[in-house]
Image 1 (cartoon, one colour):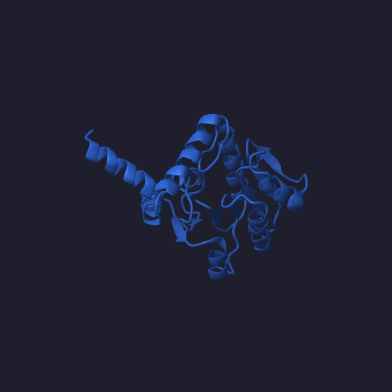
Image 2 (spheres, one colour; image 1 turned 135 degrees about the vertical axis):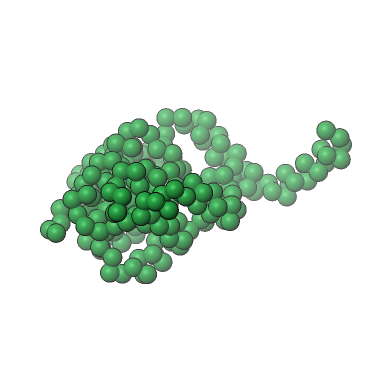
Length: 210
């Protein structure tokens, strides 16, 4: 590499130091916590929990809602487990990702990841936040809501409150783990010990008459 190329590289690193810093932080977290599921990754035990939640939801009418799709890994799994004609709506506003991708790159990556299920499995991608989604679908009666967006206590609490307000019988979510104490606190506050745990997936089932 020539001196000019080296200087150009250094200049680019300085210009983009913030996303590079965030990317490095995420990369180090993955290296240091290989046994944790976080930021779109799901363990085998997590998958069992999602499968259980979808199975419970199959006893009810209504779409499945996923709050926080990120890159679409869980969306694909839910789409593969649900009935083909059961609507699945994944909500994502592309405001954050662990690799500091720009919004448009994040959107394109997720849409390409979800291409098959969007075209063949009654799956939609709602581009916006949870508040936008619920405001636009006030009369919706979901069979299941899966919460996996922001993990701070206040955000999870609001997501749970919105889900409960719909009368949804199966409310579930991801990242019930010590690295996300806000998730644990909000879930315990809302449901106490009335949750099933599979890895870092939690499930609350409130039976609803059909």
